[in-house]
Image 1 (tube, rainbow, N blue to C red):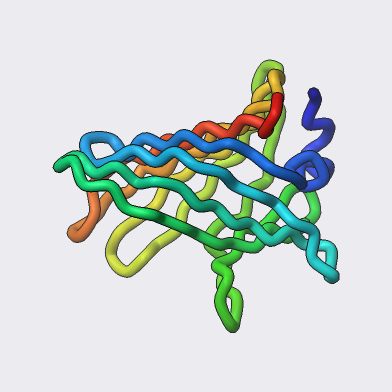
Image 2: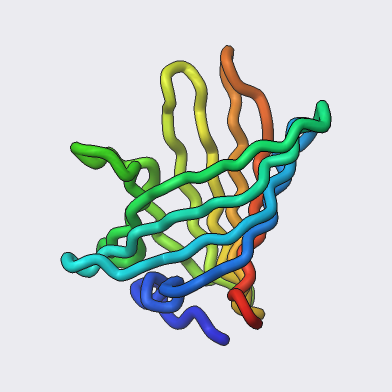
Length: 147
């Protein structure tokens, strides 16, 4: 499975994915994500799964975003009204992968993120979060469901 050009990434994302997330020292999440086409051409993103905290508690977790095409890549928007941009990802070739980076200021905390589209069809997202309220690294692996 190839990702094609940076402009083609959203089309490849459409569908169902399995997700494995590690929030270093804090939690793990196992679950599923789905990218569903919207009328305006964007993709609605919804993930849900079981969040296992370091103290042993397990919780149901869910998250929603909207992925919208822009020239050379896509925006990741918070699924709220009005929508706000979380990231603009403009992937570029890095070896056999496509890689895009972005930063987002959330209050006084900064999210530095890398989206990596691997030649085997997986996607990896890493968020390094630093600031007075947050300090962690979150690593998520996406595998096509049924692959």
